[in-house]
Length: 76
Image (cartoon, rainbow, N blue to C red; front, side, top):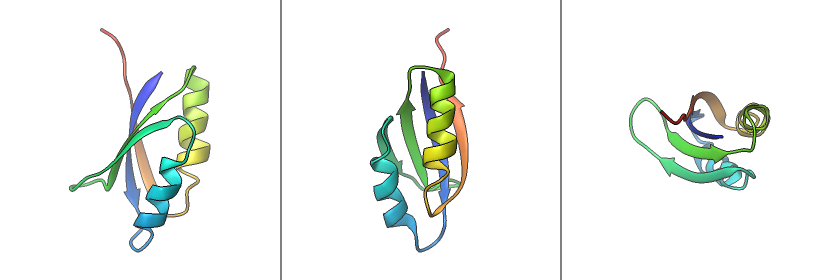
């Protein structure tokens, strides 16, 4: 399973949050962006349950992550 996760970060905590997110197992890329979101990351896991755990427990649990939106990829 692969997903893109859009993250809003708390002001003043961006650098530390990004460092922590980059170290999360399953996070493959992290990009800072301009617009309504601060970071876009790609994540991979073997199952939907593992992907859910990665996003909910690991990414949302990072100090400085104020909100997320997860876009799960699919093959057409």
